[in-house]
Amino acid sequence: MLIPSRDSGFNHPHSSEITPRSVYEDRRQMLKLMAGGAAGAVLASWAGREALAQQAPRPGKLAPLAGARSAVPGAVSMEKLTDYKDASTYNNFYEFGTDKADPARNAHTLKTTPWTVEVEGLVKKPGKYGIEDLLKLSAQEERIYRLRCVEGWSMVIPWVGYSLAELIRRVEPQGGARYVEFVTLADKTTMPYVGSRVLDWPYVEGLRMDEAMHPLTLLAFGMYGEVLPNQNGAPVRLVVPWKYGFKSAKSIVKIRFVEKEPGTAWNKAAKQEYGFYSNVNPDVDHPRWSQATERRIGEDGLFAKKRKTQMFNGYEAQVGQLYAGMDLKKFY
Ligand SMILES: Nc1nc2c(c(=O)[nH]1)N[C@H]1C(S)=C(S)[C@@H](COP(=O)(O)O)O[C@H]1N2
Ligand SMILES: [Mo]
Image 1 (cartoon, rainbow, N blue to C red):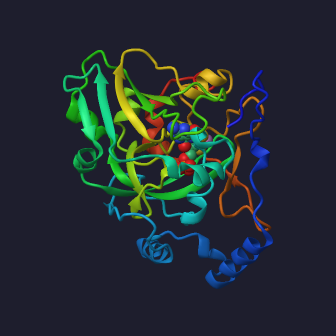
Image 2 (tube, rainbow, N blue to C red):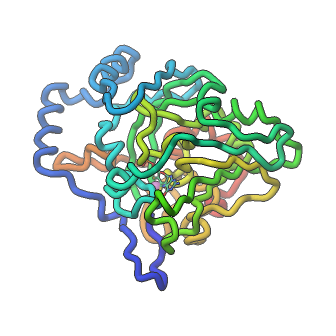
Image 3 (cartoon, rainbow, N blue to C red):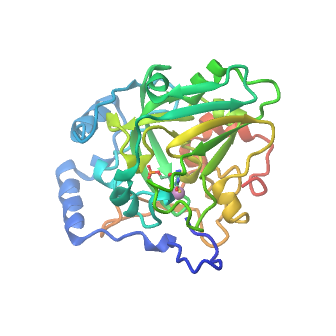
């Protein structure tokens, strides 16, 4: 993320600063391409998917968390998975620092047990959920989602979780609830950047009720068949695949049902640059850079080809109707 320089003297990372991969990785990529044939990266069948699954065994780093393959339309991308190593070492989690490598380096201090998520606001059944109960509230599914960051890179990650709608139905929103606000942990003792002026803490995000209820909106507890690494938002986060990455709030502690559009962390930091909707849209430029193309993490070496960003990150068939008639340049 990049916000206009303010009086903080803080240097924000630029989209152009995506760490170039080493020559070693170029070589590795070349060997992979040779081994798999030119079409090796594109697999269009379930057989292909299974083959990929074999290429990406459980990392064996954290507790296992299995999910059955999701039947939700659009929930299982056939694209090649991003390497676990890349997905867990190239992160945005500003509570732990602004460099992409900071979260993996610093988030070991995050204490994820005990963990409680409070459901509050305009619901008939407010309450506190211990993380274990929240995990068991519905069946865990594997969802292979593209996630595209507003800075211009993307990944393909096998998440484990269930539709946020399952929880929402359980707590019975009142008629006046039109938005859902997600409040994340802001603990100065374990998160070194909370208190810095880079953002207003806690990091807050929000969705319109119909977006929150959409079956693709995932409450995620794991990835690659294991519980989430701290740097990816343990123990529970959101993944909203048709929106820029920053909508996918990490380490959630409160889910609040509200009447008015909630203020969100990046909108508060730079209103003209990050709107409430933040739908992935190649036709709406960020004020300071184009959003038309993206780089897939792991492909950013010698053989890198920029990919064309798709409308709603490729999920238009599933979510396009949520925005029928809306001016997406105005509601960016
Ligand atoms: N609490 C919190 N959640 C956050 C962020 C953050 O800084 N703090 N960064 C967001 C951004 S900008 C992105 S791109 C994604 C990155 O998720 P990943 O590191 O798992 O790929 O997390 C989002 N969720
Ligand atoms: Mo992002």
